[in-house]
Image: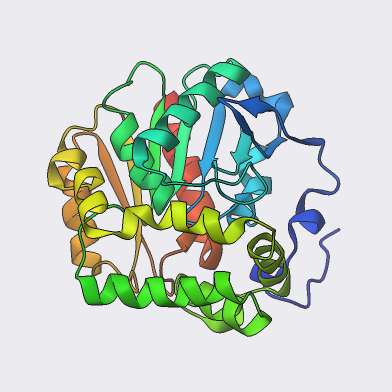
Length: 298
């Protein structure tokens, strides 16, 4: 029997989508960070693991509309970075090496064999940097509107201002406005997503953690961590790049150009989305990921 769903997919909660699936939410200590990790689809571990990496100031709920579909075929492991979500908050500054070292420790902690990295925004940035240095560790790369390129300061500062307001005063309106930076259609921003992020931003210590996260937005730090065309050209593994028609950092032509640089790349354009194709177009995203991974098994 097919249920009649009177609301858009984007408004389904994470719980409503995985409540009938065996799953584990845990907080192991990984590289000195108490790390929030969600595991779903352990019965499919033999086919491989999809390791999901969210964006800047993000959290595992960014993949709410992907976890079930992907975990029906593979084991899915989603987690919160250091300084993010409900993992240990941070002080000082966080750079790509910090995230990459934690990622490698997480892979070792769970004994993962060649997991498929699925990174959106900051997650894609991390993947683009860590995979060429450790190609033997991973199986493939899935990039969802990856970040990390140098972009005009005015555009970066505008985004940073909205983010800073949401962290300093995590009202419903400010947090929803922050999510509007990455989601094209305001109607696709669910109450659950706003509520979860509002609670995360309201944690004691998150203001300092947000400053540590924002280090990558300062010009000098961003420049030494930045992604350029050479990072795409040196990717050794099969790579799927999912771009959108409203991506803030560049047009569909920019995405197609980056995909052409990938030695073993595949390109998918998700229309009607901005910086979160996995959220706004889960139908396109989930199908593209499963087709890509299945092609590697053929």
